[in-house]
Length: 479
Image (tube, rainbow, N blue to C red; front, side, top):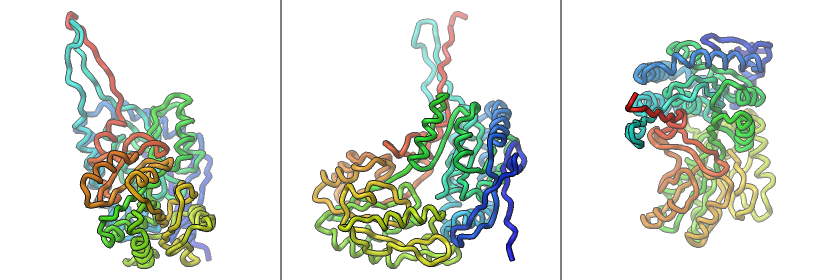
């Protein structure tokens, strides 16, 4: 006996709608492998409608005072808190994440981030007015960009939606946001929550696939395209946006090095690194996935890390003992399995390396050692619960190995030597360097990388300024 699937809908111009041509896709719960909903497969007519709505709403939203936009964002934050259990339920269905960890690790920072950007709306800074030419006074204006086309990923659907819409709305822009085709449920709920606060057209959500995202980026209306996703997706967006010179904001892949020196407290480092590597099934661009450990403690460290992996549990969302849930979709499971299947002969799987169960997309906590710098699993992003371990001889080799990948998002250094920590933080070519920790984020500090990890910043005042443009106004004093 089949169960009727829940119907998710687009949110355009203040109302929920099906795709104009009625097309849908099934949405699968990765913890069960079974469909639980349908979502619109939006086409050009839907993109046109959403962009037109955002364009109509922009002038009035732009012209509100910062304090008025702040009040609206604070109401949204309050509503997120009030409806937290609904958001958690939608996100767990989206992703299969543990219920308890979603409640403790996602809702509080999301609410805090919205409130941060609400405050940032009233704190834009610029150079003071002045006379730089005789008889002329110059001032600098910071203005919203316009309509923002935003594409969020499937690893943190709720939180990444917040990272997209909160700075954009705070700065006075209007938004058309597309969630991943595998995780639309929580974003549709967010549209309902935001729709109860904002004027129609200011915030719009359209569901769909890669083609939908491409239509958004190529559309004439948006002045900015922002995406969190793979390097391949980011390159495609940058290429499409270049055709009419849209501004582009890209937060892409990562391959974070975790550099562990011989003076490190091994037990404490292993405990923290294993959590930072396996949390969210390793589906995190900043995950502690690539450990570089000094040769003198390599064997001891690998043994301890393998034991930590064996003690780490994955399972269903309602199991309070699990650290992480399933991989997001069948393709992602296949990708992670492929990396393990293609390991070179010199690699050694110290723990895990296999699928868990036959229901859902679960993969065991995995540790792989004996690797060389040019191995595929070192150079490419696995995006799964897999931690690799290499050894190094000295600081120079550690820096060479750490920087020797195409990604440059996040990194960490583990040492009791303050001077060494400062030297490493200078030499590591990554947007973030943690020292004796890995993965904490705060709303006040920027998140974003270099090289093929993209450009632009999320969070912080820097992330807020990315959603503004700068205008010079010069006035004649003789007029």
